[in-house]
Structure formats: C-alpha cells, structure tokens
Image (cartoon, rainbow, N blue to C red; front, side, top):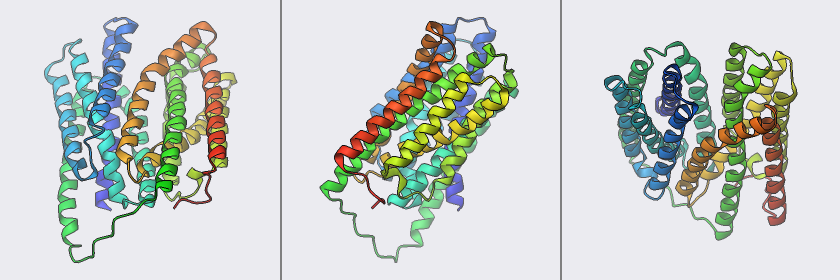
Length: 389
C-alpha cells in the first residue's frame, strides 16, 4: 500500500509542478507587459522539449530501468525549481521552462511502465495503472493552477519543496523495491507470457485506436482550457466561475478514471466508446450554447466524465500491449505534446474567424468523427470482444 501511495504521489507532484511553472511564468510575462507571442512561447518551449524528450527515449526505456529514469526526472525538477530562485531574470525563464519540459518528458513514459509493474504486469495491472495514473495526474493538474494562483510570489519556493518531496518519494520507492523481492525469493518464477501473432495484432489495432480517440480527446480538452476563459468572459461569467468550472473538468476526470480501475471488458467494445463520445460532444455543445452559469457546471461534469474515459482508454491500450508498450506509451506523450501546442492556436483562429462558440462546436464534431472512424474500423476487422484476455 505504501509503495502505491508513494508511486502515485509522483505524477500528482509533477503535474502540480508543471502547472505552477506555467502559471507563474505566464503571470510574470503578462505583468511585465510582454506580448502574447512571448507568453505563448513559454508553453511552446515546454511542449517542444517535452515532445523531443519522449521521442528520444522511446527505444531505450525499459520497465527494469524505469526507476533510474524517474530519478533523473526528479533531479531535473529540483534543478528547475532551484534555478527559478537563483536566476530570477524574466527571459531566463525560457531556459528553465525547457528544463522543466525535459524533466516531465523523462518522467511520463518511464512512470507508466513502472506503474504497470507495481500493479501486476498483466492486463488487470494495466487497467489499474491506467486508472490510478490518470487519477493522480488529473488531481495534480486541477490543483496546480488553483493553488499557485494564490501563491504567485512564493510559488517557486513551494515548487522546490514539492520537487524535493518527489525526489524523496523516488528514493523511498527504490528502497521498498529492493526489500520487497527479498521476501519472495523462495517463490517459483512466473513463466514468460506467450503472445500469439493474432493477439499481438489485435492489441496493436486497439493501441492505434487509443491514439485516435485519445488524440482527439486531448484536442478537445486543450480547446476548453484555452478558449473557455475567452468565451466565458464574453458571456459575462466571473473569473471565479471560469476557474472553478475548469478545475471541475479535471476533478471529475480524475474520479471517473479512478472508478474504472476494475475495468476488463468495455475497452474492447464499440458501445461504450459511443456513449462517452456522445457525453463529450454534449458537454462541448452545452459550453457553446448555454447562457446560465449553472449549465456550465453541468457541462464541466459531463465533459469530465468523457475526458476521464478517453484518457483511461488512451493509457490502457498502450500499457496493455504485450510487446510494444514502451513504443505506444511514448507515442501517447508525443501526441499529447504536439496537440497541446497546436490545439489552442487552432481554437483561437476559429474564435477569431467565427465566434467564441466555434472551437467548442468544432471539437464536438471532431469527437463524433473519431468515434465513427473507430466504430467502422472495429466492425470491419471483427475485433470487438466481449472481454479482454
């Protein structure tokens, strides 16, 4: 139990750290009167380094070496947090933001492989790892901006403490992992899992399906986060309600993912994907068309259920691949990084070219299109199953 708690503290802290860095740097640039290009450039630098790091390590990370990569990630986070305190210059933030992106890139893929090994290393373990991982990083993301909005001036000091706590957690996990196998030395070794070519092909198909569904879901989530403040401001919604509804999406996303930790069947069936795609589209259309504040909270709840399902689906099918889990997990992170940079720009262009509703309507349509492609592909291949093997 202690090993699990320490393990999932790491993604929570990484996402709080990232949220703090992004919020405080953007705030400092805005307070200094910098252009929107400079403010947006901070996120772009982080995303570029994050994507390149995931791409670079995709072939060398193994479950057996995941803890070493997590130590490196924790070291980067400590160095980043200390750097912001030692070098407070405005534009030196770009260098340190890049270092933060490096740390996050060194963390994400190795941690997911590590989490799967903590749970069991088999398919149920992939489901638990996907659920708990999505829960922990979602809580961290939701808490980050809300927390650091109140502690801008001392934020980097708090970040340093949080990064040191993360490093301590990694070293405690390593200690627990060294002790735990010693108690099981008398147990017979488990036979290696054999995978038929047909099963490998089926898992590969669903991993690519996860890229489609997860990529589109990420596009929609990023549009909400980027464009909801602009849309809400135009409707006269207060900043408090805008912040709370944005955080509510991540909190419901976290709880939904947590409730899916016993999943074994629905990820291979068509109807559940239809159900959560309809939920996502409905939530986006409410965001686009509603005028009452209470309806936006309902939209956040409905959309949070969708995003919790898609991120579970996204992570699960990559982790559950019996042969190429590392490849698909690194692909997940590259997709998230690229879309996180492109989606806000696309949303802004749609809002400028049409109305502030347009990004939400566009995202709703893309979600339904992705569902249609996935449904058609599953039907044609005949790979829909009543349960996971």
